Image (cartoon, rainbow over all chains, first blue to last red; front, side, top):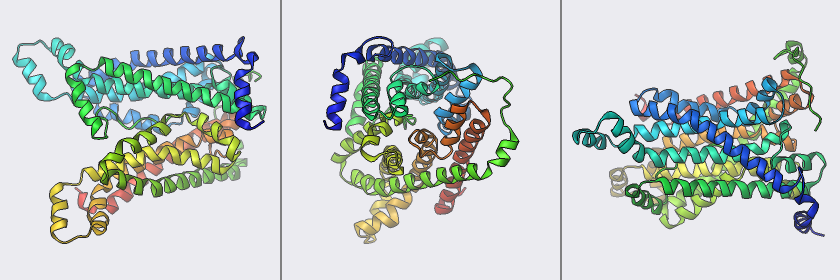
Length: 241
Length: 221
């Protein structure tokens, strides 16, 4: 049987679809962990980034946090988290939250800071209060960039959750890591295919969410940018580890 | 996987281990630098022609950046795992993956950098009788250099981080220290590997920034 035939065979084996070690359970673990980590990171990072961006303060911090995050390998964060809290779900969760915070802080800061100053002036001229300007003018205009940060973070979390199998947690990474240690490359390959599919699904879903949340008035502008080939609200993504 | 017992008395770093393993640490550091240099070098060699073409021919931009972006969203562990059945646990597997990840950043920044060349400068070059290739080499690319270098710096730092993952396929540079420490539940190699990896990223970033200043003296304030 060819290698790819064996992979198909692996997927068709009913034993791989049942129980704690089965595909459905591993997918569920992976998805729940990713949603929880991205959500927790957003809860922490959004208030910080949006506030800094609104007041235009702390730009060096908000921008550099992403660069530091890039230099710190996610594998190292994961391994160090294990040293602090032991193996299992907790270090995986903490490491993923830590990884997801920088892109969200940076993007929410940049999104708020780059809101056209004339729009702010116009809103003030119309007699809007500070709070209303924040909620009705700045936030909607910043939303595409803010959402791009959450999208980057979410996709990165799905990718990195794969590594958490190395520290004794489950998720789809189990198939890859266990396959490597058993020299079972069919299982490795099957696991990798599922990880790719899941991260592509995450990317697609978050892109749809980003589009749905973008105010109609901004949508046409970003569509024009896309036609020129350079997405308006797409900063250079974080490394997909 | 047996649960490693956490030994609370294990210190974060044991200098005697570091002292007796200097050769190993230096070998891992050297491999890390080699893997990075090859990945970024090859990535740049591929990205420059692709970037220039994507900039010249607007229609190719969407597909080119889309493809590079697609490669970028594949999680690194999965990409290496997909390659292993075909190219084995080799340096080649590691480098294919690492080069693939540099492409999006490099091609994007080359296109954006070239786009930013002022139109009047290009007109002036045309008026002075520059041929297209000469204009590209003497006018367009030099003026795009700051943006291209920004991409080069991001690609280099990203690659240095990614190499810690390639330890899983046996070609991991400093990642081997992390992996070793994790498997033996021994903190010293973890701390050494993580620290040196971050230090290497910072040194590489700062060095590239200095090279950029030397190459673009007209931007000096």
